[in-house]
Length: 295
View 1 (spheres, rainbow, N blue to C red):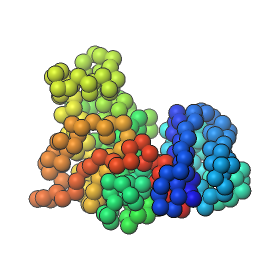
View 2: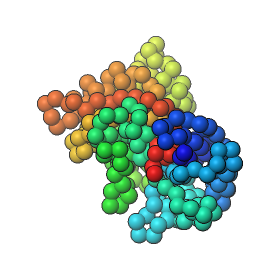
View 3: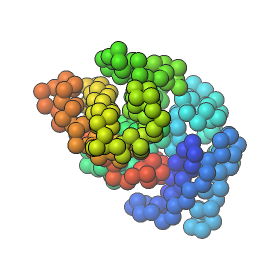
View 4: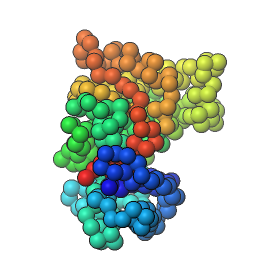
């Protein structure tokens, strides 16, 4: 049996699966927005599962950010109370065993590559389009971390060929840089652009729900797909994956799949683009299942 834990900014989700991937139990708790509280929450999930099912073979945890190769401390986490902390070491000391700790986008991508929408493909690029934007690269069902442990972080490349209008209606990214893909294709980024253009105060759900009757919603979705295609074209030009699987809240927008693959053809450096962009199979469970598969 394997435990997977998805450590999010607002919730911590745990799952127990058998060696065939069958879900045995799942739980969800509120994430405490402080370092010690976060650790206590993770420990409580592990203890709850093992109390009911016995000792497990492995514990895998997906989290925002990555472990620095130099310091072994957490870096790049938008759950900022984790940054600069020895999370893996502290968890292993509390649990008295080795754990697997990985970026949450990598966990999502792994889940979809093993038994999800990317099953059967050698090179899978998994994309998170949620509160933030991340990505993970899976090659033959193994996570590609990269030398700096930032492999797949396409959310912090600049939107290619930004127009003056696109620069005007765009806020600076939390990473302190301007023009990041995250500020265009995350849920909050999508809403922010709309609200700046129309002097409104809508969230992404309200904007999307206006389609197809509202012309402003239609234009917003057209622009969103164009932004997404331009960003993913860079990924395809460099990585050339077999398939791209979308996850996160914005991945539930059906308009994307009706238009993205045709839009990509305008930007990818090839006469024919065989890489398809598809919706995830496991939904919100992708990250937590991928964490379990880390062993």
